Length: 129
Image (cartoon, rainbow, N blue to C red; front, side, top):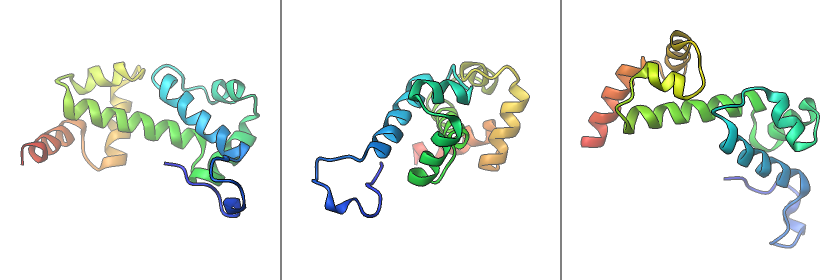
């Protein structure tokens, strides 16, 4: 959840600064399009901003670049699908718009330290406990 930036306390409680509104709008765009759209310029154009300006906003408010936000959302979805569906890791890779399942496996292991199959096994054991 986003919190107002430092110095925003002098605004009325219902006021959201324009930059923060843009970041919130971007989060909604990512949520709608993350499976199909990996082109960072797609998001910048939809926001009517340059990519450097958009990255400056996301870094200032969320501490991450647009690329990192997209990767985080994809990883979050991969974890959710591994925990709650019977789709194979290969099918999940395709479901998330990745054409190379091996790349998906490497990226997943880099983030979690586990292969998708290991993650699923551990996650399901924790759900049963």
